[in-house]
Image (cartoon, rainbow, N blue to C red; front, side, top):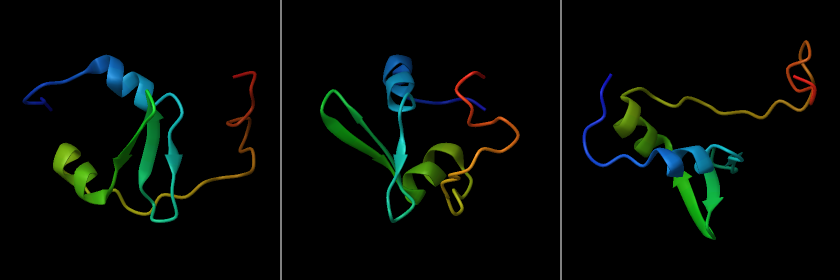
Amino acid sequence: MQMKGTFYPELVKVFYTCPKVDMGSNLYSIVNGVEMVIDAEVWKAVVGIDMGQVCKIEESVDGYNNADI
């Protein structure tokens, strides 16, 4: 896979540092005070596949959510 156009690796890194999921299953993060949203249409345009349903898992699964990983 290859991206075309301008790409800002530091912006991507900051966005994915602490993303959240809203009630509409959109992925969002606040970068330098600006809320940035990746909805299903943006995800499909960038990646070429459907995002599907995003869900938040509250419980630890075999140490996955443990802070010592």
